[in-house]
Structures are given as C-alpha cells and as structure tokens.
Image 1 (cartoon, one colour):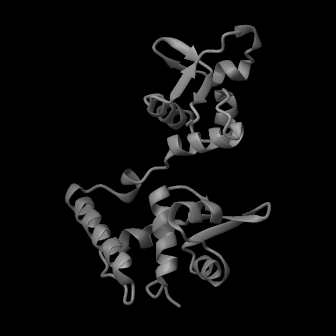
Image 2 (tube, one colour):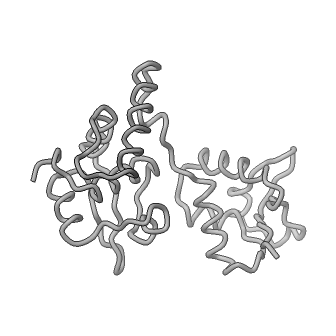
Length: 201
C-alpha cells in the first residue's frame, strides 16, 4: 500500500501526531482522539517511513518522521478520502481551510502546531500528586517533562494565569537544593519553586 492509500484510521493518527507536535503513546492517542496505532496499522505506517514507533517498557511511543510531516502538509490540499463519512468530511474541510491560511500567510505547520507543554505540565502534576493537590517542586516537573527551559517557563507562566493555579516560593529556603534554585521561575520579581493546582471539590 502506498502512502496515498492510507485508511481513515491511519490518516487520523498522522494528523493527531501533527497537531500535538510530540511523541504519543497509544493511551494518549486514545484519550485525545479515541484512536490507537497498533497491529497492522502501526506496521504499515512504520514501513512507509511516516511514523516511528519505539517500544518503551511495554508500550509503543509514536512520533511523526520528517516524511510524515511532509505527508501531513500535503494532506491539507487533498480531497476527502472515499467512505470517510461526515466526521472525516468535516475534518478535511477544516484541513483545507488551514491549508489556505498557510498558503496565504506563507507560514508552515511547524509554526502553527507546537506541543501543549502547559497541558503536559498539568497532566504530570495530576499524576505526581495522584489528585491530592499537594505542591510539586518545579525541579521535579522539569525533569519529568524534559522540554527546553524556555518552553517550560513559557508554559508555566501561561498556566499561572489560571485561577486554580498557584506558583509560589518555598517558605523554608533552607530546604532548597541547588537543583531547586536552578529550576525556579521568577514571577513578579520573586523566585518560585513550587506548583499547586487546586483540586475541584
């Protein structure tokens, strides 16, 4: 099968990977879009060189290749696939509109779709605290997310605008390690070391 004969599931996986601009597990694909990449679909996209799948522990992690990104860019100007149904048809109308915008403004997909670091940060916080709402050190979050410092800082400042989020300094400065000080973010002229997200009642 050539890359112009992909199934709707395969196409949707490619487009979700494009929009998220990062590697995703099947669990994340399922949570985000209700789809997974496994079995014959994963093997086919891997063989076509569109997606790279790496096994981490017991789960696969999927990421677009350069060829996959090129495929997605071209897909913005394609007609909707046969038998794609109403949802698939609507998706391709939206893609066509995005394609026109990129064409008119001379922007690229890479400029439009960037990883949702703030969303990843909130998800990592929830996982680390198991929903308790306890403070988490920024040093722990930085190490967990492993994104460039500039992206982490930008995302944290974005998250800090939410009413349920508090980014604050450690009250007992003696407990701070060198890593805590390195990982701090300065907000309002004060170094902040901890993130707390309020748990809905």
